[in-house]
Image (cartoon, rainbow over all chains, first blue to last red):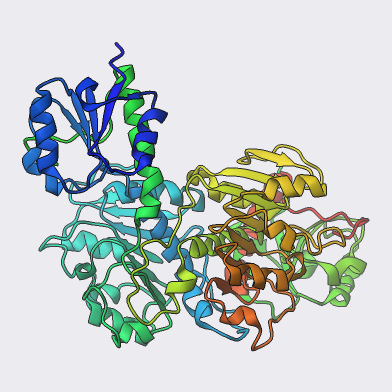
Length: 310
Length: 310
């Protein structure tokens, strides 16, 4: 059963690529009073949205919010129509960032990028191929990361709260302290891609870093406080692990003069696993896909539960 | 039809991992005068090898040379037995290096790795996902690279002397100047992974760099003279391309004080796409595989044609 292809884009002044994405999905972009669905492109204008919805009554059957996080709109949600957002879209660029930092550390780009002379360190550099990889967290980023790691034939262990099989993971284990220890032990690469909770704060501390080895690499794209920074500085200085790639820090932003800045076996990126420029084509793709699905009467991606608020 | 599992490892004094690799393939490592096959592990001792072969007559039916390049042994080859070497093994680490440099450039690791302060450049960073990729050269490195690029859903064009379809390539085109121009034009990523010949020297010059755009990345893992260095310096300075990752340079080694060292949109690695440490597990794997195939009577990997010398 196909549906109406009359979709409005609001509020006035949102960038053109939003309307372009709607049209690419096969819709006609129409005025608010002719539309049966709405793309609302303002990052933070819940009052404006409520006005539009109240004026339209139940005519607007679907609202797409482009961004992944919809905190500003929680109070504006209602049960009178379908709601979708850009949830999950950021997993792609962030998973790419994991692979970027992991490979950069394994190939000593940390070291070489800072050099202004031709170094002859033939002993530097390890392969990702067939490496033992431990990923803490089993959400959307990990799903994409496992896909990207596929051709490297790694031995992958995923730690998650509710363990169940994941495509591309050799094993998925629970998150008890003993299970985390066992998953981390001897890993060539440890990736932090989990939510920050009281239980996961400091999950990678000095005791667990001691379970790694001198060629191990740590990559954090989750939240800074997952890693005990002082313990990491000590491990990197002592060489008990090889290097670290950190897109999130504790404290963040990392202050000037912090010891991590001066360690050549550490790459720090300023929380740019996903940037607006990277996100735009992915958000556009999501909008286009959902518009096409809407018109075709298919299930939409990224549904929001108005009762839960996400 | 299975064959003898008596294999000698010579000459005396080669590292233990060679014999370990032979045993891992299911062979018994025996003395030279009891062996039916030989792993010759010296990088450069053709005279020693000839002595052993002449003493054994036609008893040694197969010789495995571990390394990929066998130039020192060309004169020692004969048609009296099977010869194999490690050819193709290095494609894996070098293709990883391509992906490392490409991702590092696309995510501005060149820039961030050198910083000692928290930068807020939200506009930096592009995705490899769905990028338009042009690979110059269609050999073993490209084969592996296409496999690694698979999950990124790129649009890939391979340029090679004799175009025929390759797994993972959207298209393979010939190497006429016009075809090279067309393949390069508008690419997000250009990878140089081809042999150096008079025709390919300077294949990426200023005129072709002008076919790229301000977010384009160039990665060279082939030979320095494929790229006209002065033209590259000019393009990086002007920002007509975004950045470059270079594991090979012209001149090489790049001298201290060369302008490339001071450009923050360039990552230089000192010809370490493959290092001895990276190669060892791959060579060991090749030896183990071939030993197992030998015993099982199967075809061996990396055969050498004694008449051609490679």
